[in-house]
View 1 (cartoon, rainbow, N blue to C red):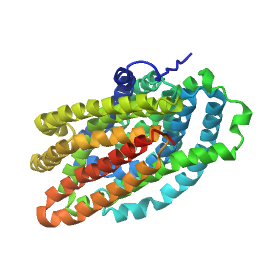
View 2 (cartoon, rainbow, N blue to C red; view 1 turned 45 degrees about the vertical axis):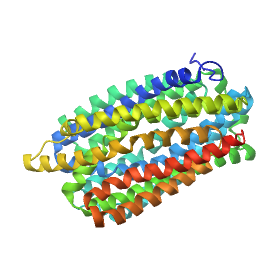
View 3 (spheres, rainbow, N blue to C red; view 1 turned 90 degrees about the vertical axis):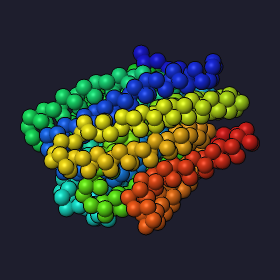
View 4 (cartoon, helix red, strand yellow; view 1 turned 30 degrees about the vertical axis):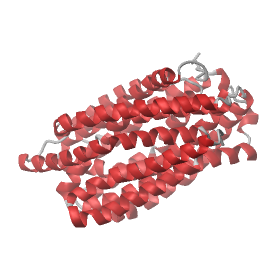
Length: 447
C-alpha cells in the first residue's frame, strides 16, 4: 500500500531535502522528455518546428496552470488536514477537489480552443510558425484532463508525504514519451503533432499510476458522501486554489505579452530566445522541488500548530535554495551554449545566430536565479500556511515588472532589455513574497 509520511517530527532541513529528492527526480524526468521533444523536433524538422513549439510555452503554461493552481490549493487543504490528523476532513477535501476539477475542465477546455487563434495573433506569432504552433496547442489543450488529473493526484500523494509514487509514474511516462517521440516524429514524420501526441500519451501513463496509488491509500478511502457538493469545503478550496490559479494566469499573461515583444524582433531572435527558454524548466528544477517539499512541510506543521518549526524549516530551505541557485547559475555560464546547440540543426550561419542570442539570455538568467529560487521558497511557504492572496498579488507584481521592463528597456538597451525583463519580474515578486511571509509569521498564524 502506498505510504504516507509525517513531516511534523525530525530535522526540518533533512526532511525537506529528502522529501524534495523524488520531486527533483520527477521534475528532471519531465524536463528531460521535454528536451527530447525539442532535440528530436529541432534535428528532424529544423529550426521552424523547434521555434513553433518553443513559442507555445507561455500560452501552454498559462492555460494549464489554471488547472494546476486549483490542484495546488486543494493539496494545501489536504496537507493541513493530514497534519492535524483530521481524516474525515481530508477525505471531504479530496472528494470536493475532484468535483471542482471537473467543473473547471468543463469551462476551460472549450474556452482555450476558442481563444487560441486570437491569442496567437496577440503574441505577434510569426507566419513562419503560426500554423505549427496552433496545431501543437490544439492537441495539448485537448489533453487537458490528463494534465489536470496528474497534478491533482500527485498533489494528493505529496500532501500526505508520498513523493515516491509520482516519481515512479514519471519514470514510466518519460520512457513512453521518448519512445513515442522517436516513433511519431523521426519515423512517422508527424512533426509537431507527433511531439504533442507523445507528450499526452506520457501524461496518460502518469495519471493512471498516480490514480491507482491514491485509490490504494487508506486516508483517501472516499465514500459517496464525500463526492456530494459541500458548500463549506468547496468555498474553502476555492479560497485556497482560485488565487493561486489567478496568480498563475496573471504571470502567464505577462509572459504572453513578453512573447509578443520577443516575436517583434524577428524570427531569428525569437528562435534563439525560445531555445534558451526551453532550458528554463530544467534550470528551475531544484528550486521548484525544494519549494514543493517546503509547501507540504509548512502545510502539515501549520495544521499541527507547530509554527516555530515552520519558521525553522523556511529559514533552512531559503539557504538551501540560494546555494543551489549559485551553482546552477555558474553551470549556465560555463556550458549553456553547448546545451542549446544540442537542439538545433539547420543552416550553419542561422544556427550560430540562434546560439549567440540564446547564450546572452542564459547569462542574464544566471544572475537572477537566487531571486527566483527564493521566490519559490516563500511562495510555497505562504501557500502551505493557507495564504493564497499574497502569492496571487505577487503574480500581478511579476506582470507589472515584466511588461514594464519589456516595453521600456529595449528603447535603451535593445535586445538586452528583453533579457532583463524576466529577472526583474523575479526580483519584484520575491521581495513581495518575503515581506508577506515575514508579516504573517510575525503574528505566528496560518490562514
